[in-house]
Each structure stands twice: as C-alpha cells, then as structure tokens.
Length: 229
Image (cartoon, rainbow, N blue to C red):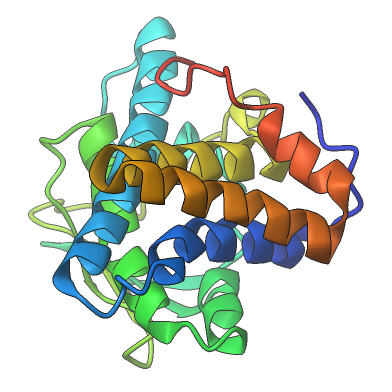
C-alpha cells in the first residue's frame, strides 16, 4: 500500500503518526499516572521491536551477520537527522544535534512524550534486530543539547557504513500505519474497552484534521502482519 494522501512530507507524517499514537493514553487522563507512561513506553518498544525483527529477517535472508553495520544498512526508515560520529573507539558514539522527531514533539508541546519515545525507540529497535549489540541511547534532544547513541566496546577504525539497502525502505504511510496499530493493540490489551474507544477517537481526530482519506489509509493497514518482512 503506497501513500496517496497529500501530507507535508516527513514532518506531516510524524505529526499524525506519533501524536495520534500518543493520544489514546492522554485521552483517558491516564498519562499523568504511572500506567499511562508505562503503556506508552511499552507500545513504543513493541513497535520498534517489530521493526528491528523485520530488518533482521531481511539481513539473515541475504546471508548477513546481524552486526551494527548490517543494522545501519538494513534500516527501513530514511534518516534525516543531523548526526556526527563523536568517537569510533573504544566505544562508538554518535551525537545527534537536530532531529525532525524532536522538532515535531517540541512544536506540539509534547516534550514529555518525546523524551519517553526517544529514550526507548532506538534501544528497542536494536534489541529487535540483535539484542547482543550493546547499544545505548544515553540522552536525547528533548531534555539535552544533543542525543547520545553508543555501542560499547565497538573499537571501530571508522564509523559503520556501506551500501544502504534502499529496496527495504518503507514509506511513511507504512510506518504510520504500523505505529497506529501497534499503539492500538497495546491500548486495547491494557485498557480494554477504554483503550479501543481511545483508538477510535484517534481515527476521528485524524479525519477531522487531515481528511477522511488519511484516516482510511491508516485503517487500510489493519490486517498487515508487521512481524514479518
């Protein structure tokens, strides 16, 4: 399924994908309590773990070891952050000084959501790909001047790179659909009928703000198996 909905590029997709994924928790006035935050973090980890496992499946299919370099090459999402390697060895460290995710959270006044999202998304993504890669997201732009991503004991002579597998990139329609349905599943599992009602409210919000076609596009991903590549 490809996106036929006019969105304002990456930032527009982030707005309706990430914000609307967060809404089911805040809608029920549970975000201020421990359950809301815990459910949000769990949903982020669930989504990212599925994405990481799809990346691993493709790499294994191609006969690749599940290394940090393969992780970089098999990513599904086109990176647009401003990042600079700070150190290749003994620990590989990457500093991210600008990021559209952070910018979107900031503009929406959702830095609390941004902090939780960014603190867990990449670590869960790596665990899904290969839990033996010692990756840590030590800080992020929502609370610090820059993000710090570290792979302990890497001892690289140069940053990991190589040819990116462009054929495995997925568009924002897919990623937003995946994010919505991941949050939908988690909300329903934890909060039952209230979670299902909140997710239905998200679709209504999307339709009201961006048009029914965009809400229908989210619904169109409902029966997709996001566990497999």
